[in-house]
Image 1 (cartoon, helix red, strand yellow):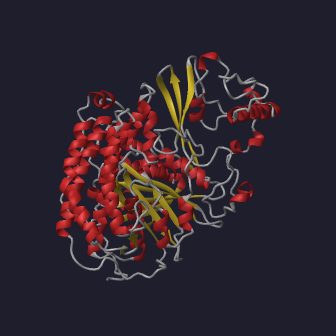
Image 2 (cartoon, one colour; image 1 turned 180 degrees about the horizontal axis):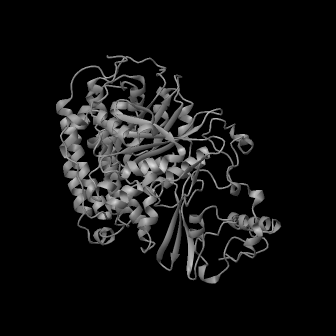
Image 3 (cartoon, helix red, strand yellow; image 1 turned 90 degrees about the horizontal axis):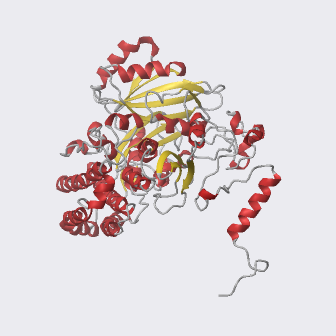
Length: 427
Length: 189
């Protein structure tokens, strides 16, 4: 190997940035941001902000005691489930505190929706929680129907429930894969994506899109079921339980998986309610709250199902809860297919609707919990205020509660068991 | 299909309306119901009192905060902080609308009732500039810490000159020119 002459070699761009930053900071009279303390060398260390702490909590996180340091995870980290940044305060290998820093994917969807007509709002909400796109459209559709005073035809309601439950199966299936992936098991995610792809093909057959469907309309759905969709559904239904069983055999009794999930990140029911955690995470802590039962929307009052709960509230319970809900959703899909009536799938609604002034609140059970929309009409063609409550945004608040005392390596394993999706967190 | 069909109000909401009138009497304004929601308006200053009663009264038992959101009713009007609550005992969502003065947008935090309100309140502060007194962590959540405007207010001007927007500058800590950096002296970290 030839030795590079330090004078003539081409400098690394990162190095240039560091030199430039140091020069600018020196010119502004600020201290260098990167630590030169030898024992921390090589870590991705976070500097303390160059400004007074804005809040009590910020002061708490960013003031260090002897032996503590701040490290940075994300926003581009292979297992942060999107662009999310965590500032982790550690003492050696133990997490002391954690501060989620959000906003790297913020698109201002609420503001966009306030400038769009009611029909086009349903396209803007798609990329919110991108693993549960049908659910994202469901709540605004219900809210706008309440505002406009119209009900979709019966068959449209059944098709809605069908695609929404399919989406739940695919989303929960992916969570199982990601949870194993964050513990170093690469195989389950590949099988999870095979299973998801079958559902995506079905959704593509019925809506024409693979991910951002734009399938729901105010007063119905875009298309009726077709032959391709039904034949794919039949094939999928024939072997889906076997596939899930295979995944279960791969993960559920795995020694490493159990060691890293049982008694990890335990959340009590009372804490979960106080923190606003909903959905499977809340039911895994033993609270039987499911919007489909608590406030039946769409046709869920016509279907037979029980609210499943687990008792222990740890990562393992959250995983078992997902598996149980997948099976329950398949059971619901069977009932929906049996009961589906004939008829139109779209009520007569003009392209631009102008609801009477008023307010409407619609909540649904998304795979991540209570997803709700609060919409205000002032009589114009677009919503005066359009507010979305995303479940994974609120569930993230549990992180600083669950982490302290755990190892750094368990941060991602516990976070994956809460199953947040950054598209929804950052809106 | 049934265009503009009138929606029925469930008779079950009636008992909740009666109960609320008994408990709060004349404090409630604009008590109303729609398809599956009961709503009323209160003064922003009384939010803790009313929400604590709603949560802790065994007959009402609204144990879960479903949503907390802010609405801007325009320059010559007011802000509104809207709470949606859930109870097993009443098959209706409860919407509590608390009025906040637009010239001095302050309201008491509810993080001691529901810890999960913290992110909601940070978002409302970030987007609307409503200050929740007593919240331990009232930082911006989506925008960067040195951003100086409130994008979901009705008077938000184009993003190019957001800092000149009349909605800028509720919190003096967001004005970098006022920061005293000398305290962060040698900054070995």
